[in-house]
Image (tube, rainbow, N blue to C red; front, side, top):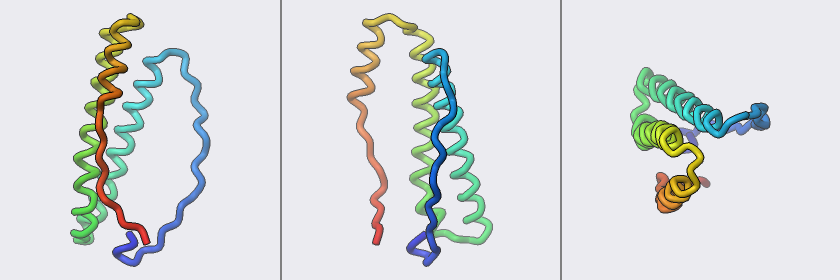
Length: 111
């Protein structure tokens, strides 16, 4: 946005208001949120496409790819939790697997 001389305004984010009864409810809400984020990115991408803002589309490409991975991760976590249940040994192994994940982000330059 800054590269296109667009003003940026950040508003306050409301505190979460949900209470969960089961672990699986949290994971399903997480997947639902990832799907919401994906839809939001697609909406922005579509708006950029309509006005032929190729720079923004190129910037968003990483986020489109990353969101696909995030939805897959959320679905995989639900599947694993359905399989493992509350077995302590399985949960320990899952924790070790998740701790070994690495993350990368696009380089953002903010003035």
